[in-house]
Image 1 (spheres, rainbow, N blue to C red):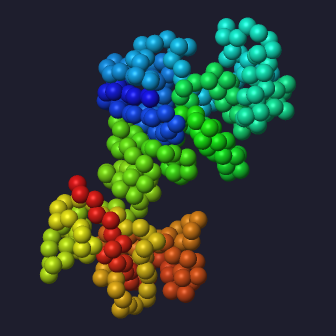
Image 2: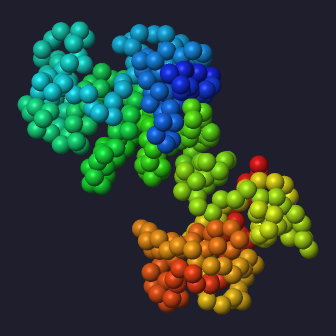
Length: 350
């Protein structure tokens, strides 16, 4: 439906480099990256606010690379809402219909319908200065959706909102998508990407590093940047070797870790979930073939318990419960044993 082919754009000292994106009809597509990665530039190029130096943009098979903004059938909702402060909510929404609908009754019906869909019917006569951030975002959505865009472009729509507002707007965006609206949504928040996206592209320094389903990207990152950005703490580049029929991953030429039987004998990366690591005061006899003694370097509260950082020659992150931490009397500087099964390791070929 929407396709960007080898798009390159230069703005000042920053450039988008050979951006290739494919968004199918009905997709919820997330463009994920840190601030300054080029996310908003991609949206502005799709919308026609920026012209590419190279490449093409297609919508439903039609080349819209140099099409006028108002004829692209895409709608962009800006991060700062861009609501006209001197107009009421109803007037802001109606502004998008200027020159499109002549009948006052038809215009009124469309405004009422979109206001009900977005949940702002009771706000139509209010001025923007009386609205909350979440209400302003809904007004901006309504003003864009009333144009019936084929693709809705969202620039950090949930930024600077509290947890309750983010939850409400996520629900609204999911409903819009379930009703058939194709959405391209940029964010720096990987949890937001997980909760909304059906397809994700990670962008960094103007380049797309990886594209796929949330499962593909978050469980099989293809680079160290993607792994760390998406929350994989224990991610290491390794070389592999064989020992008595076992495949061993060697980290930093000094730490040897047993891999699952099906792991390839090649160079690549390993990922170990912090939740799959067992901590103990003494080495324990178990089916876990990977056992190391290390020093506790840091203890960090987390939403799921406590994150413990252990130096075994490399830094390992483990997640345990507060009860386990108290039982083991874990403190910075203490020696602790860690263990984990070979099957807990995911190996990714370079």
